[in-house]
Length: 286
Image 1 (cartoon, helix red, strand yellow):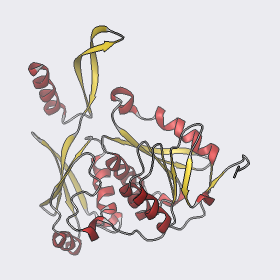
Image 2 (cartoon, helix red, strand yellow):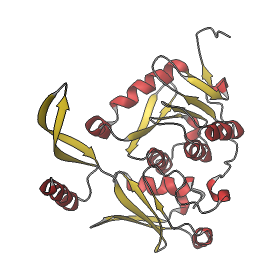
Image 3 (cartoon, rainbow, N blue to C red):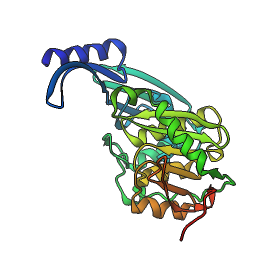
Image 4 (cartoon, rainbow, N blue to C red):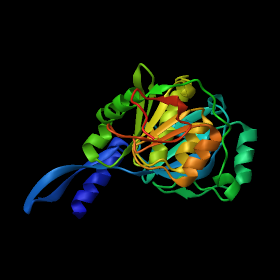
């Protein structure tokens, strides 16, 4: 096994941190043993460095990192719009990846005053916030005339599974997808961290000039507080998660005016807040 680990490390260095690795495993199924090749998702330390000063290290899937950096910078309140990210450079290192970001000096000074310079684990949603005020940030109310048919949501839920390329191999990464009514899914991003996948998606939308408020969001995870916060901050008005929401997520969505849907599956979903944006043809039983 030690030789296998060394081989994986060597491959990572040679190829510049791939998003998954191949490894020989011992598989047991119904009492039968087999030796097979398996695909393992990578999580790599990603250091975000603003104006030459390290800010945070996130564990993430090493794909779409320029989009991730933009999305993170926006949803964490480091910059207010995409044009304030002046430059992005990605560098592969022996022990991870550095993303060098240039932002305006007044934004950098505000960042320095926050004192947030910590490590963010894969499941970390607060990304090194050092005070309660930094952690619980109330986004401005969202406004949109968007309406989504329940049938369109069901179709998008089926479509997102087909577009999760890394998850098809590894079975261990989340996805965030953005869809437009009457069109379907436009963009999908994957990551071992649910919030990282969402930041990548948001970065993708902003880099390509798409208005987040014109579509709806699907995440293959629970709807935790930071997922609602990140979505609302960029104007997304409908978030559907395949798992449950948290109480704080529901309260934040209600206050922000965001439609929050949980347990979104082919045959069911639960609407927790602002149900007017999701339309149904079936009769409602009270």
